[in-house]
Image (cartoon, rainbow, N blue to C red; front, side):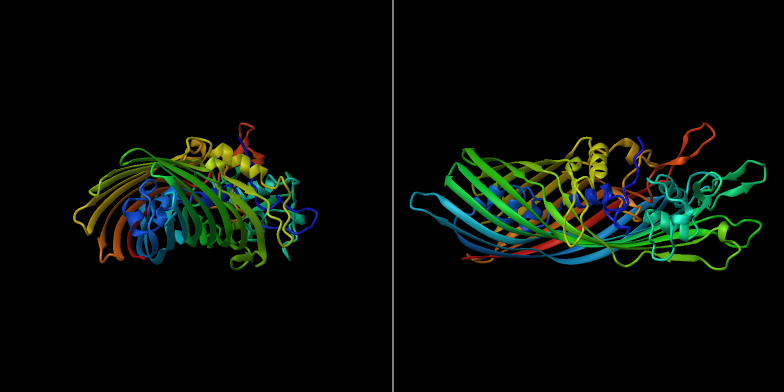
Length: 558
């Protein structure tokens, strides 16, 4: 199945005559995939399996009813954490590593509980929680056989050839970029990556070469490629929670979450081509991107817990989608030295305007959870939490803000692609935890978390994709999230009747797939069999993200 790329907010706003830069399937899924076990040190020590254990504000992220189990007085908590991150990527048999360090405040919370004369208890809580802090770097390169494969220039030419309506060379304006062509096509044209065949009225890679055997112009892939991505960001949750316990057998809870999201990425992709005998130049291209996304979101959750027999707690929870309203700013630059420009000196350098800004919305998937715990008196607690969601439920929607009006059908193509490409088995998360009271003051804890990989169309997740992923404008590289495994250890120590100290260590491992640019079918260039040419990208990068976290929580009860 061929899908044309969505490169701007409404493909192009033809009525305005101004080109904008927009969102995509891959950006929306990347935002929706952010789920971390951050919160108090007790929460992290149990790998988040706190939904039916409760009495800790962080439990509202697994089951809001857990807050109702805090039934006496008030409690203040503050959690600080250190994270050492290691990014390891493998590309063409080469291994690359990047290290980063982060110091964060993972939680600040307050809870207050009171009991009525009839024995019913109520709990109110407010918390600021770290929903995720990101500082990630990927820097990888590899050699390729230039006789095989395609270049980013071929991809850009195919985007131009697939434009509707088709934009001919004379319509691409270098001054002011007042063009109906997509940005990646404009940059490729002005930087000399692509040529226009006046006879056949098609765009093609400027790195094609004239074969001496009389076969005419032949495609040539790059002999070397490199990709560097530097990402940073934060997701902060502001939670207002309320718990109600009408009896010792039943608890209810609800939480309103307001989130603040910031994300930035800088990327640089380059390709090098072999020298030609008739010229001394070394040919190549590069594409640099800077993107900033920021805004807020809101969601609501409900939870319940039952205690059918003494010590056994069972519960369920549901979390509505997080509805984000976001703004995006983007800048990109392309340079190139190609055979077409061999008689001219220097590289050709072209940039987009600095005002390529837009607004959009993302709705994350629904989340459904089950919680269970067995409390063995004052000696131990065994807990388990399960949750299900599917990235195919992610949706982009138009935001009407500050003049950005995309229309109701703006993201139909992207939303259909999300349902198709991520419509396999959803993401299943299992969290297990155990807490043992070694003494009256000391508690020992451990936990494990497994999140399965989202079911992704095999044609998209293969080493060389066979269907197209929709990418945001010129930011053509994209990441497909994989499985997550983590384990944790921790302890809690009662310093006094009012003060307790919790410490946790967590090791987190996630595998991802990074694609330098998408697959696409050229709508105007045909192969020897009379078929439309499939532009196969360079092979993907296999990435592994490792994190070691240490968290410390100080609690004060009064």
